[in-house]
Image 1 (cartoon, rainbow, N blue to C red):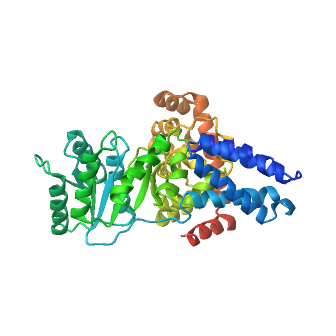
Image 2: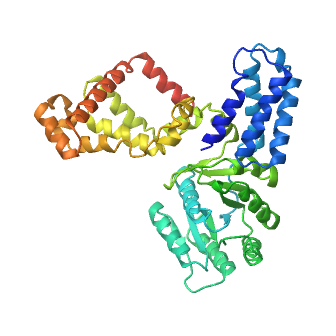
Image 3: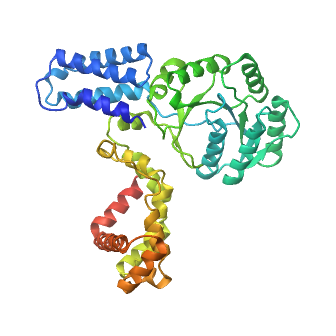
Length: 442
């Protein structure tokens, strides 16, 4: 995400990062390039101009020209202003009410129905809520079918009324159903259109008045850039929504919506969609996103994702196996599965400081582990538990069974042995201290 913007901002700030002489002229020239980068990212012209003017005022006000590391200070100022531009503070979802009612709004094709499922899954797994999804798109039969499929995937009940064409009535009945069946969160998926129209606005306004939601979210496709911002303003004028959801941030996006929307509607971005899977949703942190845009990575989010998959009991069992030299391919496969649960490989790499820039031209496939998994699954239980028994003839059989070559099997064996040695070394003080630090960050 934001790869093009990140690259252009990096080039713009590059001359100020070294130890070269800095003056008002090259600061002005740098900010001119920063403004150009923002405009190329489809940021509103007035917002881009105001942004660079504010950065310039703060830079000169803090005597950037006379500091020991003027380039670093300039980058910090830009980072702080990007954070403010995107909202400043992280704003969570309001879970008050009994039940909590969350109304989803947005145009057709913005990813509203899919995100309703993602939000339901997020609240169910991370907030331990009993969630009810409500299908109120009575004009597009496929929408309710899609919601039902999503509900089955995540194990969440979907409420819909066949033949009822009154979404206000359906949403009101759904809340009664939720109260009667112990559901403490109701997520209402409303109808969308291809463009903003009076009929749609009247309908969603009527639903809003009838159910008085604790949270009204506007879902927008981040790939539509400045159009997304204009649509958000139209919806906000009618609904006065509480927050924005940006979907499809895993694809090619110039970033204009994320950088402009808070300034235009004065509402926070609350969630971002980062992939197609039901767990590919993140709370939006403006400071972390600013770090990623400037190529600084997002180590905090990376650690948080790792901690979500961290099982203390499994870790203790693994430590015992490593200490007794019993670490096998089944354990190796288990570690791979945990990494895959953390999200898309491209997204994870982008969280590592400097890695996004270094691998910007590398196509990172989410099936990167596919060959490794095929090789391990082609091994016998004995081979997986005791890798030392794997000889030349066994390697030939494993390669044939996995559709790979003997060289690839050898390469995996070499990587496995290196990993085993490293993990054995980490059983000492260094590894334990790292575990303690990660626990302390919870």
